[in-house]
Length: 396
Image (cartoon, rainbow, N blue to C red; front, side, top):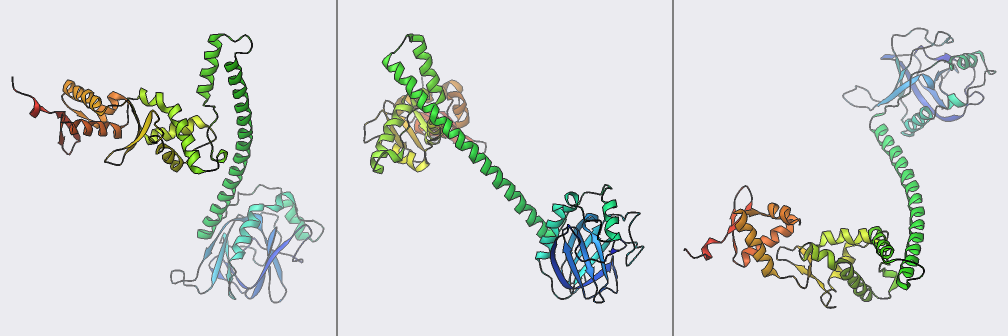
């Protein structure tokens, strides 16, 4: 408690009073002092204590390293809320105070007449703001204030508020505010990007029109190059919901666009593509006009009624794929059967690696091959492995 200094002013010039709490007792470390029933005045620069006899002394907030709370309970043998202030070493030019020497580096504030939880919030905020660094106290009020002005030039340890659960919650709130600010900035950048993307779409349409009309001296190689650029950028005129009055018409037009985009990719992967892969490919190609999973599924259900080259297929396991109409299950079973014969046995993972497809589709192909009687399974603790169906082969 030897960090306190006598003062003749509750609030000094350039100092703002934040709050006042009554019925507070002071402890010098673990020693209970005779200062009880006083007022604690929290300002932007100090904690001022005023006794019932109008004796006033103050503690500079810059000396507070961190603080913590003690709640009443059996573990602490206390009946009142206490706040512990852990303090830095006093300076050599410190003025006289109620105690000149103390073996403790902390003091306690005991709130006998009830504790307002907002005291911790205000104290933490005052320490975090460190107003004394930018707005020093006026040195004309008293000699004590002059001492403060001189000692402020000396470096002090960094203040680290530590306030238990309340401090953690406050820290999380501060992190949340910082995250919100970052998100707001990111969305501002995203809006700018969207504006630029719309300009790019307009430019791409102009280039496409010139290619179609063959205006100017555009060679065949340049035409192919332009088309490859546009395809790689994924810039097109995507079907959007706001362009159609009814959802049914929107899903039909979207289905036609899906068939146009995915017909060749589906053929390239063996005539069958998982709906999850379709979702990723389509949204990558659409750029900013992303599709929801529900809209994609509803559009895929329109593929068969519209007699488009790809259709939606749902396996018995529930796996959904887009399948080419030219796809033949029997031909797939024959190819898988031949692979099993060549290797002796195959798992779904091995087939997926061999064919460059997902494990889910590989498993469905193996089950399909088994259904046609061209493979037998061995379900062990290691894996589900498929072997050639030797039961159908005649002995020679």
